[in-house]
Image (cartoon, rainbow, N blue to C red; front, top):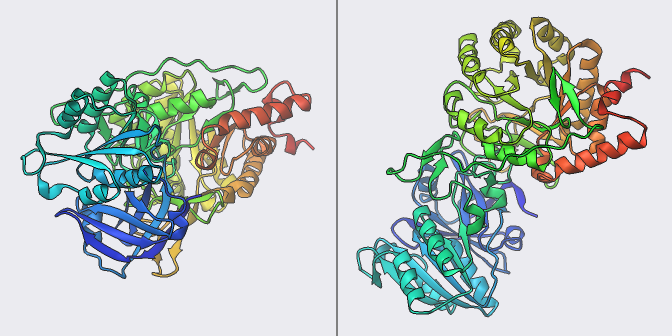
Length: 593
């Protein structure tokens, strides 16, 4: 299992490979024994940022080598470090290369050679024949050429300026290789995306399978936040290595996302940032599980929690996996990147309790229509989570939001790590916002839920005032304040300048259920439960305490998308075994004893 919390490691050795790249060697038996070629680590430069770095080598003795290119603020700062300095590591994460067949060709571009170095070493240990094609602009930028040779690989070089090997691109060299009838059973590639897209085209023509190591912005590293989305795949969890055929229905080679989640073209020449539409999906309406909340029909009462993915295609995947509704990331008026990493990690090993301080990254409401369009290919209700720091900002967001094909608005009043004070801490302002949002949403037939946290002290009394202000439902509970600190450096682990974040997962289960129980006693409007839901039993407890809908968050990290089908199965088995015809029959049951 990966090491899921940033853990300090001493730099054992530094070696300059090229003008841009240094190899960092660490000793970490715990990480090294779990590492596979193609996987990556999250590398924390304390007080600066945390970035994903592919593993260039891992030895049975516990040594780890990472090739870090000086291409950004965090990596530049890492390049200033010396042997003996401390750097945080967590991982390994993701799916690596599958070394199938006896003859493998590896196509590397630039510092994409790093993960292929590890793959080549492992392949040679398995006595496979390995051909490495490496391309760079010039001889000075070639990486690990001698290392490939020392492991027994056959190496061919391409440089664009002709200073070494074939003059031209590495993809042209690949075509020459195939034209000479030198064949292989598998191609692995890592490098600039246009280069890898061309490799995929060539290998498809030759009918040779190819595995591609994809780079995207990674924040959480464990499949939670969706910042690394690629056509609904989470690169940090489902990748970074994919078979080329998996990527044919994605935007690979065409566009990617900014830190905010906004779509941008990969090359300046391209302006197309549209998705390839997924197949329309119609969910199953099970009589035992279907429900009606705020006049909306849900095929089942299980949804994802807000924040678990910005992309419409990822929300679509939730629906296909069994979610009865999907909830967007919290979207504001303007695009914002969020905080530096670390932004999400597990609080202790295998605890299933997490802390995050994402900082509300989002592409802005005007840029979000394309994601809603993708999500709506799944015919389940869509709940749009929104936020704003004042009445006017919220008005502008809502006026745009209600023109999208949404079913409900959920106002996030309680994010504990935004760059402004959570609106729930100003009840007068929140009541004003609710009135404005309601006046905009209701004429469109869109109900309004308000998401609150236990950080306000008296959630039940607070929720009553929100109901009086016009809320149609209450979502509870949002994350609880937390400020984890590294014990060695005595500095916050989270990248939020204040060090504060929100705790989620198993630690919230008991408190969340108690809060819902208290809310139900006081409210006449529906309650949407969120907080530590990992099983059908958790849903049953929340339902008996008074909740009508149930949002799953942290379990998507620990259990994967299968959590939806698991919960539905357990929930239906309980209802049928106890003679219930519909889940609505147990809502509030704990109050009727």
